[in-house]
Image (cartoon, rainbow, N blue to C red; front, side, top):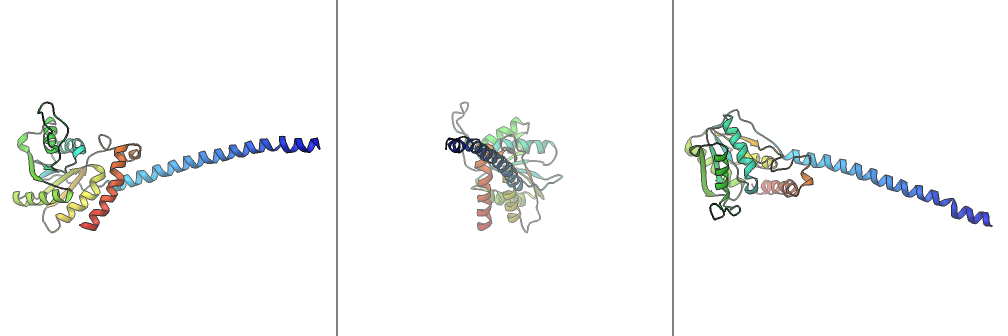
Length: 225
């Protein structure tokens, strides 16, 4: 009787421990595989949003408004301008104001901050065109660009925007400029400065505010426009 009790109480215990270890190992493996799979899916979702339509040269470079993303867009536009890709830079007014400026004792508008950023990058004021008519989104900006191009006799415009906004922006520009003789190009600003890189966007709060939201906006634009 004693031997049977010992057999029931002592020998199953190592087997239970091995079972718990096996379950823990499986969970770790599943977690690693899940993390790798999610990383690939997240990277693919971000990369799918990034497109470009290059132009060797354009009559003008137009910067889409982007509030918090204005620095990456204007700096890249200045870089393209200096590279000879355009003869002037167009800035729009999204009617939003930035943070408090001690120097000016007011909240400057983002288009003013964009102009200041372009000036710091070495772009002379006479090469900067500010379109003061308030815009409510990418489609409004595209309409203004077309009106300006037709009025000024421009044949081509190279548009600069943020990387994850590029697919929706290019689709909208093509819709608005359809039927015109104006050639539209688009260059996304490089990631890593303000916008997180495609491989790591999901590790940043800004990435969650950008990539998933952009897909919602794309669906909305397809339904409305």
